[in-house]
Image (tube, rainbow over all chains, first blue to last red; front, side, top):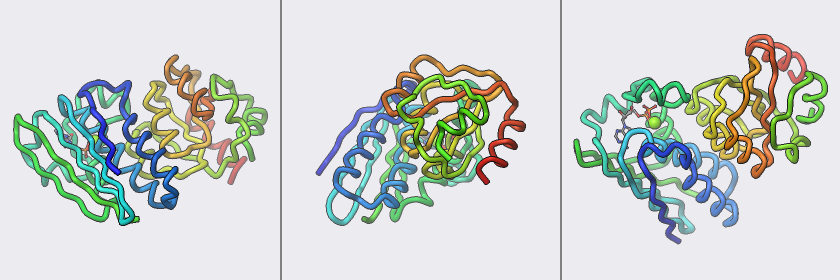
Amino acid sequence: MELVYKVEGGDFNKAGHASSQIKRVLKQLGVPPVIIKRVVVALYEAEVNIVAHAWRGVITAGIDESGIRVVLDDEGPGIPNIEKAMEKGYSTASQEVRDMGFGAGMGLPNIRSNVDDFKISSEVNKGTVLDFFIKF
Amino acid sequence: MTIRELVKKMDLQVFSGENGLDREIEGGYVSDLLSDVMGFSQEGEVWVTLQTHKNIMAVASLKDLAAIVLVKGLKPDEDAMEVSNEEEIPILGTDKSCFEFTGLLWSLIK
Ligand SMILES: Nc1ncnc2c1ncn2[C@@H]1O[C@H](COP(=O)(O)OP(=O)(O)O)[C@@H](O)[C@H]1O
Ligand SMILES: [Mg+2]
């Protein structure tokens, strides 16, 4: 099964929409709650990163008996130093975004600690591709 | 304890999500950082915060939290209350500070 969602940069009103749709599908499929919980953390953080840091993006979730693979492909400023971005507490979020409680610099570290396979690649001024897999 | 009992005991205001008042409380979590709550809160917890915008409901619903409590007399945004009603996860309010409210909550549910 493949699910595809578009995400608009800057649109915090819809942030989390794709994550909650995918959560619903996993529940209907009877995926164990402990696994759904990990998917939700990784997915939400990755979705919010497109909203907070990129211009627009597409989320593709592929689900089969073995697990869920999620690819988040965005057009945006990209990440110049991925190693730095992966550090706990590192954030380039604006003050406005921080005031909303985003921008704690915990997103990427929390994604990595909840998934079984994690890849990130980025090109400055073009965009970022985040790809993770969680086993069922 | 249920959210309904907590509302009564602590004289909380119910802004929205009345249909979720019979949710059972499993614990509490205090944070204004959404990623912190997303990463580390547990299902059934009461989330104490001063964030009032719609995104708190996305987090509460994705994490299956029991309720959100806004401290210091803060009021939720209109669209946050709409989602709270749809998801049946109550948004509650207290005039107390975060410190005072959390202390009392701890002594009630520990
Ligand atoms: N999709 C993205 N596009 C551009 N930059 C990103 C993206 N995702 C993350 N980043 C960069 O990595 C940093 C760390 O991300 P994260 O750990 O999620 O923390 P936060 O989102 O709270 O800043 C961000 O502040 C940003 O600079
Ligand atoms: Mg982030």
